[in-house]
Image 1 (spheres, rainbow, N blue to C red):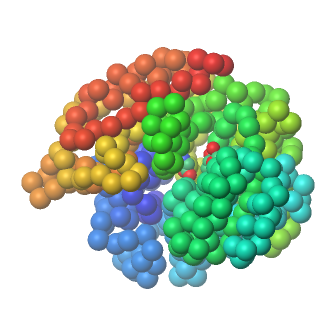
Image 2: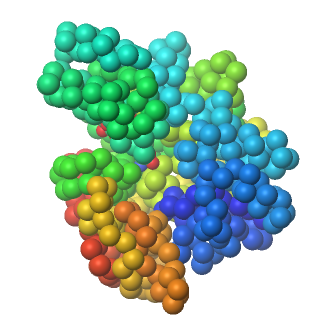
Length: 425
Ligand code: AMP
Ligand code: GLY
């Protein structure tokens, strides 16, 4: 099989590494890719993920058998639909189903209609009504831009002043562009956060092992929200009892609801959960693998990923026995100092060779590229996802931080407390 992956982050590198292990994959391609993915796949960095015509033409020229669309923007924009219309076999939700992530107003209404546990909320399409509502609302309150905002369109407001400023930022100043045309105002929930990714074939849903990411830039969960600064898997707080509840009241009902709405979902659903004192509730859905969740989950999966991908596309996921290793993984993101606000790029990265032939250590590339002399240099905010596996979370964390020291580059920055929650379990 010739497989084309769409995307360029650590998530796509982790997907590529899993696919490269499959006996069924002859050749991997990636658009646009990065320097790490280029070691195992033919990449075309000149094509962007939103250039649907060029992607379709590339798939034709290279006689691609399967396209895996990983990032949110092309999923929300309908790349899957366009490739399918052109006759390609594609993994990922179509545009109608990807709305589960691309509109928070849609997903909240879906949960309400189908009784799926989530925070209470109201939706507004004009700022005056939102402000009037907030005058009487209980604080803290959570404001969410309706559309895609790189994971940054969520504001937790402790006071009415902050909430007013938030409405201005999202709906009037349009910090997140048209994503802020609608606003969801949500009840503030407390508890442990857990991410559960699940394969879905339209009818059947099979959850993968759990994970927890660290969204804030600084230690102690301080500073601005990022795409994710590190991750661990499994979450010690995701017990068998929590899993049973979520399968019954969240995972299957969500998939059934999408089908009932005429929006059959095939691909991966990412359930962002809060384990509240009243039980698990959905914080958000994503219509794709998480980044860096994919990095800690896929390296623990025992199945051939292509078997699972095929079963999702052909609606025979009930035939799959999804299995994970009985161990743990931790990913520490090495970022450029200043991310997510502003940072420099183009610094040479050294030490990458130390990961070669070392079992249980992985260095997933995110923002990297090869320069004119063939050196690998930094090319983004999140640069690398240094990941290690071991029997326990504590050991995996120690190994990930050990390996994080093997790498050097200008303005290297990482959080020092990835997986601290493990010690509280
Ligand atoms: P989201 O992009 O919806 O996952 O939100 C980003 C982050 O904001 C989540 O990971 C939570 O930490 C926080 N968050 C979102 N919704 C709520 C809520 N209703 N209550 C408390 N925290 C929330
Ligand atoms: N790590 C969170 C996300 O991928 O959205």
